[in-house]
Image (cartoon, rainbow, N blue to C red; front, side):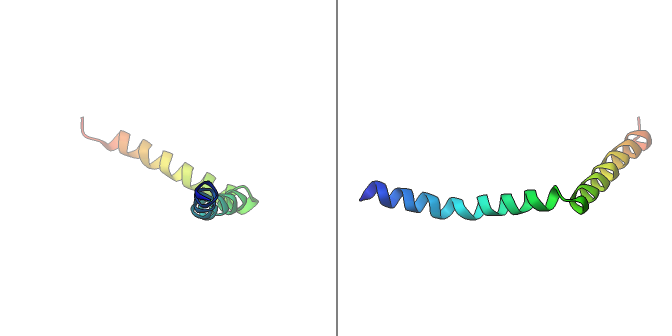
Length: 57
């Protein structure tokens, strides 16, 4: 009985993160998600490059 209860408890708290991760993965791999992540990564890289150039030496 204890093993079954431990299994159910473990499955219960792990289900929301797994479902959320699957949903997030589906959203991020769609055309709009890829565009958004590419734009954000480009903005971060550009910001870091500008910071590197303008940083006092």
